Image (spheres, rainbow, N blue to C red):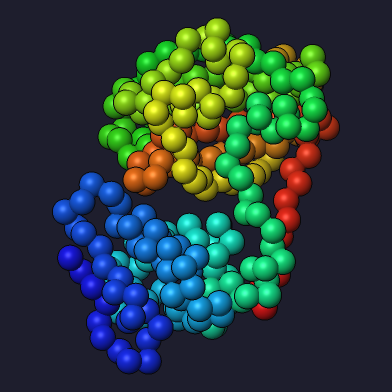
Length: 261
């Protein structure tokens, strides 16, 4: 097990951070979970400076990409902040207190339901396919390996809202179409014992393809919001790679953001 080098001035020393290289749990996830626990238990003080990635990786005996991914996970969760030229710091106490709850990992179906809108779903495709390169990387499988592909049309209050495309590893159960049309994917996965834990998401924009325009009642090339999201379980294994296209005139992304100290 790799452990941090001893340095009495290092706030990480007392934490006894270490990773088990023989474990199937990804190294970045092991590190992120230890840091998260230390922050939430108060063993890593608000405002504590972790330094830059190079120094941090050297102290832990890990690669820089592994440390970067672990820190990025906690930045996304609102527990760490980064400042260019300074490094990574635990969110100061005042900011943490005023932040409110961290953004929840929910499905679009449940978001609509919570907002008082009437969600509905049509399953357009459910099949086992060969994983393209980007999906394979996201799910941690070989390119061309068999994965489940799911495409749905999500409606809100009877109007088409989004085309949802998901790829899932074969180990993840795929509920019948009737269940997928009645509930959100996350809710069904949890019921089957697969619990989404966290995700990394990118929001972008592009023009609607011919098929998307037809499904969403838009013109071809009309602007759509895109959501690319990789969801993992508590062990760090990917359970879904999602690529959604959403009508921006029918949906609003509302988030609370904090400025660094």
